[in-house]
Length: 143
Length: 283
Image (cartoon, rainbow over all chains, first blue to last red):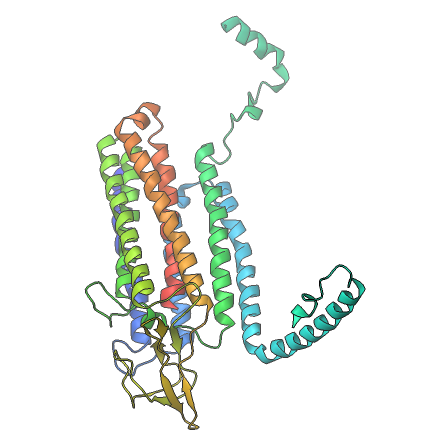
């Protein structure tokens, strides 16, 4: 654990560091999107990894210095930090799924229309079976 | 009492080397129950936020276009409209500053300085309130000024090149050309959204389409959930500051551990904002 004076230095360093990193992030967003220099655009594959890694660095600094994770017992920090690794898979899986929805819009629409047809047929046959229970006015409501 | 204690000790001779191991005598994590449970609560809360942010990502990636953040968030108090990301950067600084004052409060607690704890907690609360005020202004601008709702998103982007056939009385004038990806706001006047007509390269006349529908719901829900965390954090900070003022934690003699625990929560709120800021405003 740090003593009082060392701790105060870390606080000052943290303030400067988090502020500067945030400013760099915003600068990347503004310059890369052409707000500072007219007509200048940076490709997303440069901007995104830069901004994501700077944010991860900020997160690391907050957890390790401000929340004192650096000074905790190894077992404690592992038990808190290890489960978050599961999120990496969550991120990959859902990003992949989202992109798939985007690229297969036409297919999804086609499949949905087939689904509606077969659903309509089955509900028609089921309404015939349960015709005594289903009121006649509600039977064609599926279309 | 003393003889009784000796007797029990002799009775339990077999386990004499580890007295009370099952009663919490050993602390493998060298942290109190309360602090440990705060960490695990924050872990579960991190999963909640991650769930929201990952669904935001999945929905955003499922759309052919997404509102441009530096177009959507470009207003400042006082009627300034073309200041991309400036206001939200100020909000981020406010939150960083309140995180810094929180660390100072915890440090003063460690050396048992009551007035120091109260002073720095006061500044932390102030930072939290300023942040909430900023968020209230941001929401008001989006809801009242730009008519974004949970269901309707007037922020769109063009999916083709074209030329406007009419103006909106704000930034867009009739005859103005635009290219793919150009952002626009559909203004709300007299009870309806004024979707401007334009002509694309093929000569077809179309009107501005609404942006991805989920944008408003995702924005209000996720920043709202974060804002709710800030709000409850302010309430807890207030209670703990008042307790510190009465000398409650001084009497406990545990170096103001309660201040340390609410500090963990407050830094977590800042930590979540790092990611909210990244996905909503930067990317």
